[in-house]
Amino acid sequence: MPEQLQHPEQSEQLQHPEQSEQLQHPEQPEQLQHPEQSEQLQHSEQSEQLQHPVDPRPLGGTGLLASPITLGTSSLGAGTSPGDPEEAAAVEIAQAMLHGPYALVDTSNNYAQGRSETVLGLALAKGGAAEGRSVVTKADQNPETGSFDRNRVRRSFEESCRRLGVDKLGLLHLHDPYSVTFEEAAAPGGAIAGMLELKEEGLVDAIGIAAGTVSLMRQYVATGAFDVLLTHNRFTLVDRSALPLIEDAAERGMGVFNAAPFGGGLLARGSASGATYAYTDSPPELLEWVGQVEGLCSRHGTDLPTAALHFSLRSPLVDSTIVGISSTKRIEQLERARQTEVPPSFWEELDALGTPPSNITD
Image (cartoon, rainbow, N blue to C red; front, side, top):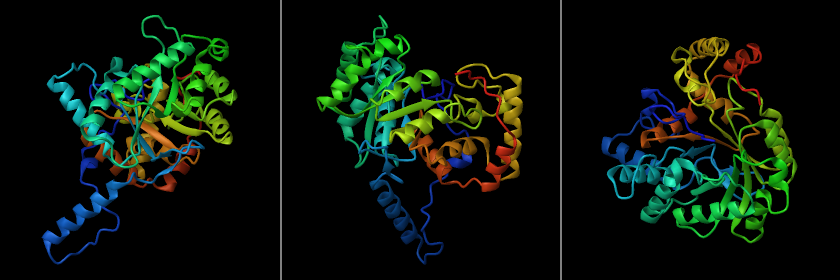
């Protein structure tokens, strides 16, 4: 379940060069008598701003803090080998994530065949993480056999800890449990039992369920076993099918991550690109609807990626929105987009367009 776009740019990220301009502190004085004092003040304010994660908020009842945005790493380290220049470049990106403006970095046991966690582990060993920053990962099925029982959950946890260089985790998700039925996962010795054991033993502080299919996710949430929900592609400008699921999780006091706000490409690249949505082809009616949203964006002085990001950010039901990145400059672009205001009138006109014709059926 990648939270990240498998596009040549390798991320569900903002494609607007103008958003890469240096972030300006909101309280920065407009006039200073000495230019050198202006530069020193700006650097000092930006350094102070990055000492703590931006806009921290509780992640449900987990005791963890999240920022409005969480950085996704599904392609981090892909195609790299130990010690090669590409790995070194990936470690630099990971270090920027761990010392950037957001509290959490999201990865998984199977991202980039384990290289994502490995690169993050190298970054942690090299420079640690800034105060208030941490890595969230996920337990995955056996990549060879598809097994996903209690024993596999524990092996996955152990593999992740070894790669990351840690002994315990603040949050571990059960990720994409599609190779087993819900009944198998919930049975004695199943995946849910494995997750609960890790929490009871103090090896993880909180456990989550992370997948796409809404009907399946409703079953896992209903168990009451999980502290956090991670849904993707189903609470965006063009698909709202996860809303009842998110409302259920929030009512239970669970933390909520909403991943893939750009739908895997379409809402980052626009209707003219014909890009996919949720990793499947976008039908003509969906492209036409997105074109109407682009018209709204133009009339209200914003753009499609910024509106797509803020659709998730503005929801009181979502604690953090996961966005995959593949370069350090994307962090600054995202933060600039986060600080950009989308006019309230835009949302009123968006609602007037009615239900979007999503290509997702569950």
